[in-house]
Length: 172
Image (cartoon, rainbow, N blue to C red; front, side, top):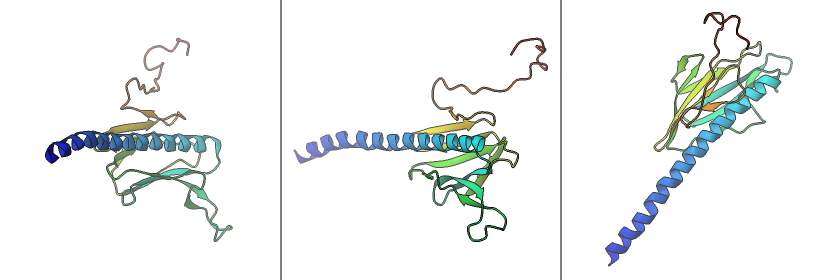
């Protein structure tokens, strides 16, 4: 009798625990997507250089800005964590396994992808892997909206050269 009760309770709680972990991973993917959106927004409207910073030991992704040094305002600017955004702390079951800046792959324990001093930025791709979900989030260098490639219907627009395709007289 007791063993049947334990089996029934186990059959009820195990799917809920897996479901909870999956929801936490999905929430983390959404938060990474939002942080990339903030990166694009801050880069497009701000005058300061901005960077994405990942530290695997903390399992956190954060925004950093090149700002005045509070200890030496007259000195050179220093990289500081952005005060207007929160870092994304991934669940224990997830890691950023790979990132790329303009197709330069980053797999280090700590990495940074910064915007350029002229205001442009690289194409950023981040691969986040967990026990239940894996997602690739891409922020093109010309876009302000990141795209999550693991979702159905996600389309990434690629720039094309109409002249190179023999369509120089096509309207665009």
